[in-house]
Length: 252
Length: 271
Image (cartoon, rainbow over all chains, first blue to last red; front, side, top):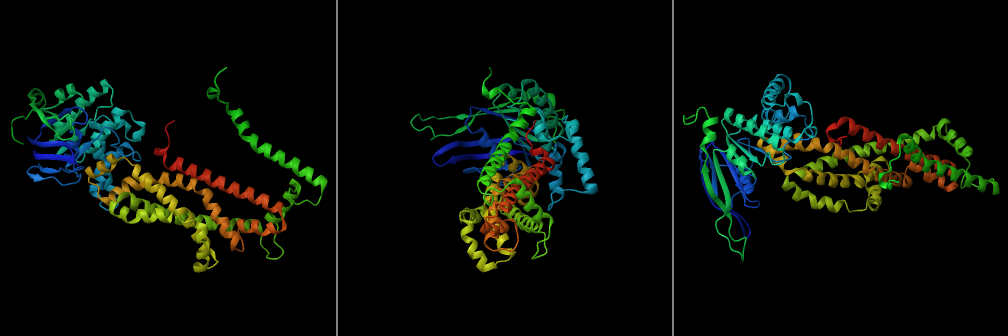
């Protein structure tokens, strides 16, 4: 279960208003895609959901509880780049979340616990199609494989909410199509609520069950920083939800 | 004819070109030494290679009449012991400091200005204080090297920690990492190869401070010996010692490079 309420959220940097009065109610297991011109505040919005940035005013709640003001395992993330740890192999990257949870002091598991975590990580790598690359380092992977690893790394921690910041923006078109399949599969298998920022409108329509566009409602040419962006369109996209949600409509 | 920037020497040519400056230097020395000795057989400034070899043999393979020690190896051992001990302290304290500064903003605010200031103190100016406070024994020499190298290494490493993409730190937190876990699983492992780079770069300073400390107060050590025999213009001792020190530094550099390539394969540039 992960419903998200965004209550009158503003984000200001000094005199510059980035977001104004964003109000949203997001249902459980929604796949929210967010589009907008660059600089419209969509990444800022994602960073606030993540806890990297705090709203200047207003509140964000997950399942009715205000979010922690810092990143935590309830909210997984995949960035466009730098999401992985270059000093760990693919398998160790994916295992990391399990190791951190299992060993508070050393952050490393040993013996049976390690074997169990290894098996779980391998299973997850298998489901993202990366099992054959598990001994390689991230730098030895293609862009698409790196993003698969990043997604596996996030999903293994079973986050309630998965935040994707233009995760496929740097990939070739052919690879992107495979990644779409993958993310929809994982979204259906793990009951997550997904927020994805994208600059690709077609992608946003294909993947989302709900599409948000961010833009400025008011604009003062004399003071362009005076007004911030807000949600200008909020579209339910039910075709995809029907195709990929066998249990759609039935409560979890 | 291709442009110069596109003309790459082959393997053999590269080797020959690399050897050339050494050969030229040696040849120039032999000629100059020959000319001076022809004019005055007692000239001490540019001893012949034969004299150098003879003296070196006496230093490296014969016991000193007064002390009964083989001076060359005694000196080498004394200097290497000081340098490795000092570098061990430097590296570990710099690493600890850099991680603390790089990871915890409050501790950064506390320690970073102090570190930047301490790094600006000329270490040699502190040497008299070290001798007064710590005495003329080993401690003060090691302390000089540590003071001379640790702050720079720490600052360098702290910068490297700062260069880690913020995304990595955020990602680690979304995987449940505590501050401590971010340090031990994300930051420290990525800093080891950087530490090696930093040590390699500070190798010159390390030897500088070692020789400075040994020159002023010591009874053994490579730097001590050079400054001791300087009084007798004993170039036949000084030259092989300088060559030996250079060779030791080059070897240390190569070993560190090898260690980095072997132990931190992930940090090597892709070929």
